[in-house]
Each structure stands twice: as structure tokens, then as C-alpha cells.
Image (tube, rainbow over all chains, first blue to last red; front, side, top):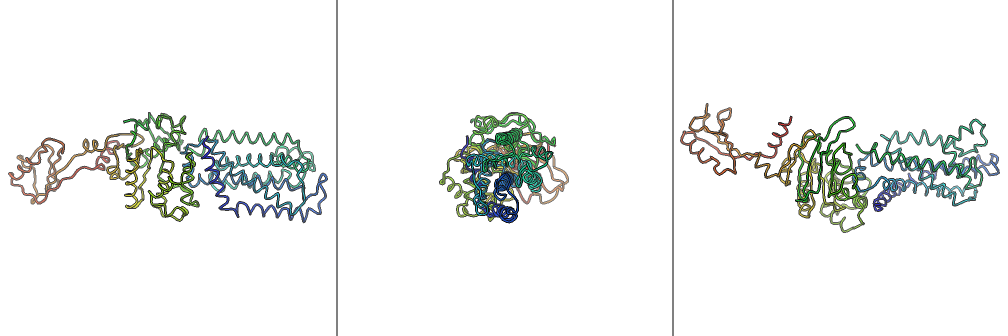
Length: 253
Length: 308
């Protein structure tokens, strides 16, 4: 294992975040805080409790998860797309680095950024709405699993993308709707039965449900099923990445 | 001498169907400077890219320092440094961080002394804290070279290293290449500048349309294919060559004002003394005398022309 290469890629990617911290850290924290102010503190006080939980507190896990998804995908996608765009990917390909090591470096850095920002958002949320965490270990486990899985998805997206437009298209047209319809702001049980069934095809439902369970002990779907769904998605992404590096798809002529 | 790179029946056909390499066989000897010449699109860059791992081969095999480039890629890639044709740098990074990153990527332990030496060798030391975007084109080229050297490779590929580079940097680069060779590094360079190959290389390979059409010691190549010519500028034009002067290798120019004599410098008798005596005897006066050695460029143009 070329651990020095993993560290080099990881540090290089983290340095990019620190260099652009306003865009990388401050922007998502501010935009999520606005959600808490509007939906939690302002409108939230007029909405009745959901399953015994204050509405402001109810949306915390969903909002954190939504930001985590978006950031993981975009961070990892830009991380690998940028070297492709500038041509510096050549150096990665000519270095004694295995595909796994490259993924560990890029995905590790992207996931770290998302986790750190996720935690900052959780702390910020505490200033606006009171909430509790019943299962902190599971909460953290879901945070890490989701960040890693969706960073992998972003990595695939970055390799696939031919231009900045495609890079923005998938998060905008796929991740945002899935996150909004995944129960960030409501419980799936409040939907009519037909839409409840449709929702079960949305992978984000499982993430938010599992994450919310770690906070309040309530969930739309069984926690085991949630974990299984994330693990399945993680394995699928891993499979696609292995295939990309075996065939050289979009990275090697 | 032992081969450090061995290329066997290497072919590459790109997805669009373009055949860039066709059954290339090549042995690169340890410690030599090999220059690969060839017109644009001949396959030079494809050959280098396959050895370095940035392009996948269609068929054939390559070993570097005894290891296969696919099954033993960790060994082969740590052995190789690549200075590619096109500049590709993270412009937001500083020079120091850029070279430090490259050393790490190649799995070498951090060593500031090595980075310092390489940066000083390339006159980049004073600019180590500068961001790449603030550097001139020539300086960026130096950074590319520094990146390829910080992991202390045994084999260095220079793909068109002096394309668009000013005279000073070109000279610096030639000096550096010689120093590296003296330190035991094997160097493979591709170039359009034939004088560069002539100046630097121990051996010369010519690639055209994906085939290696020739590989030869430079001096041997010049001797075999190079000829020397004697030019006599005549005072008065001649209509025909007088029979007493005519001989093999001698020709009269179209305007009748110059006698051109091809001769072999290595032969025991070049025939120059005899020719000059006969010219005087025939009463032909000349105002100037000049000799020219055919250059690699003449040889190259001849070879590639024959291959068309």
C-alpha cells in the first residue's frame, strides 16, 4: 500500500478546501442556518409536533443529511474533475498509485470535509432549535457512511462529467429532488399510501430515516433496512469505481 | 550494456480506429540518452504514454527495470519520471507544495533536501513560495521538470521538452540532462529539433506512422548515412563537365557555376587532391571552396520521405 500517496492526495485536497474555506465551509453553514431560522424558529413554531417532536427539532437530521449529500457529491466530483480538466490527472495515472489508493485519497478528503461541515451545522442548529441525540454513536456512523458513500458517487460523477454543466446537473436535478422528497421536512407516514410506496424507491428516505432514528428513536423505515440500503449503495459505487479503473473508462485512452 | 526498457511488439489502436503504434520493438540501454525523432502524429507520445502508464496498450508488452508495466506497475512507475509535452499544473498551488506533492504521490519519504537540490538545479529556489499562476511559461516548464525529478527516477522521459522554450532555458535543460546522465539516469527524449538530438543523444530512433523505422548510434548513423560534399564556385560557368575532370560523385550544378563532389571522409583516399589537380589542369578557375557535412536533418528528411 502506497500510504504516502494516499496522504499526499488527501492533504492536497484538504489544502484546496482550506484555501477556499469561505466557499467550502462558510457558504453551506450559512445557507443551512437560514433553513433553521425560517422553518425552525419562524414557521416551525406554528406547525404542530410530528410524532411528539417539535417541528424545528424534527427537521434537524433531515437538513444535515441533505447538506451532507450535496456536499459529498459536489466535493468529490470537483476533486477528481479538476485534475481531469487541467490535465494533471496524468501525474496520478503515471504514479505508482493503485485505484483503491486514489479513491481513499480523493473520497477520504471529500468525506472528511462533509463530515466536518455536518458537525459544524449540527452545532449551529443548537443555537436555533433545541434537539437531543439518543444514539450518538449511530448518529456518527450514519454521518460517516453517508459521507463516504455519496463522495464515492460524486467521484464517479466527476470521472463521467465532460464539462462543468454536467457536473452541476446531477446534484441539481437528482440529489436536490431526492433529498427534498426523502422526508427532510416531513415524515413519510404523513403521505397517502401510494406516495409512501413511491417514497420507498428513494434511497435518501432510508438515510434520513436512519439518521433521524439516531436522534429521536423514531423512523419511517426499520433502522436495519436503512443501514442495509446505505451499505448496498456503497458496494454498488465501489463496484462501478473498480470497473472504471479496470477499463480506464473516461480516464485513460 | 543491459536494457532498462524493453518494448516487445507494441501496438496501439485508439478507440476511433487510429493505429498510433504498429509492432514496435525497442531496447533502451541503461544510462544512455535516446532521442526519438519523427513528424507530428508519428506515435512518439503514444509510445512514451504507454510506458509511463497513462495510455493502455492494445497488444505487446513493455518491461522497465525487469518489471512488466501492467503487472509490476508500482516498480516501473516509481522508476520513471515523465515530463510531458503539454503543461498541466495546479495553478493555485505554490512551487514548493507542487513538488512536495509529487514526491509523496510517488511514495517517497518527505525529504526537503532533495526538493531544495532539485529546485536549485532548475533555478526555481527563489520562486518556491510563488503560486504557479504567477510564473512565466518557461518557469512553469521548469516546475514540470522538477516534478518529474523529485522522486529521483532512474529513467526520465522528456516529451518535446524544449518546444516553445527560449534559448537560455534550452541550454539549461541540455546541461541538466547531461548532469542527470552523468549521475546514471537513462534519458529518452522526443524532439522536433534535430540539432537537439544531434547535440545530446547517444542513439537515435526514428518513428514514422507508428513504426520504428530506424534505431542507430548517432555517430554511426551520421557516418553511414552522412556524406560530405565539396563545393567549388567557378569563375566562369561551364556548359558540360570536361571528360578529364569527370568522375564518380562529381556533378555540375544546373547553372554551371558550381562543381559538387560527394566523398567519404573515412575513406583512405578522399579523391580531393586528385580532383583539384585535374581541375587546374583543365584550366578551370574557381573563386571559392566549401565543404559541408550532411546533418541529421538531411538524413531524417530522407528517411521519412522514403517511408511515404
